[in-house]
Image (tube, rainbow, N blue to C red; front, side):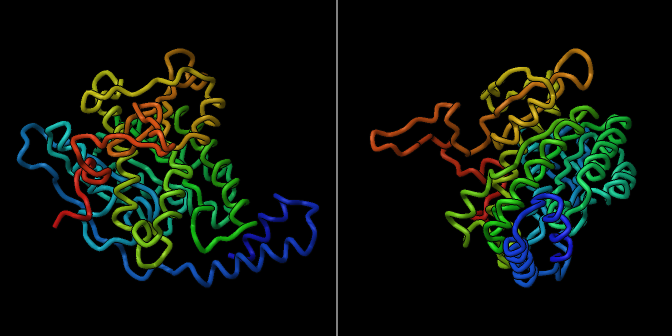
Length: 345
């Protein structure tokens, strides 16, 4: 990893003092010692969710890296795929058949093989969470984006709807310290913006994850990180799933407006696709989808009132003391609004 970081540093901060480069290399080496290698595969959440509901099952696949596979949790119901399948089933009152083809440690270059596996299930909808390993391995960004775009196009050609959670902020990981953290954050944002453009051009929708979990992870690392202090805990995955779920439901809805539990999405407006991508990167939780008109030129930004997460543009207000407060829908926590919460047993 240190050698790969060196290559990235050379191109990113050309002209920086040798002392600074040395510091970055030492930080990369330290992070490599602290961040653990995967010891065992995560639990599988494959199966039917909501079998009590009538009608044909919605066939769902989840592709990507460890964040899609759910590495770091111990029960199948705690994985992102299971959380999303449960949420879709409960809100659409339909059974959902889930297949996980995500691979721990995968980079975007591994997506062609995952798509091959996913298409065997003839899916109705696919969720892709990818990008973190492309940043940590300093893989060529253009190639990573091309692989993702090709994956979305193949799935869409098969009639499958696609939702992509773009690259999260790798700078939020605790073992990565400044100034390496600042570079990791920039690389993450640059990749997320290019992912957004490629996915929307290919006919999919994106949800920006960005630094969505960063403040929560920093404030409560014991609760939000798993035991390896690198991957999210069950609560961390539930928070992420709560943000992806509204866009997933919007993709599955007939009109695509994203009305969830009578709480309509706020349509921020229409932008050129590159402008929309940059704006989404700066506002985590923003959905980007294609606008009507010439393909690949215009995009619509929406910000959903995701389950359990207070947002200022959805009735979020400040108390007299300056503290932001907001009611939680139906008195539930963020994760319980998705479907399962760590408090459930």
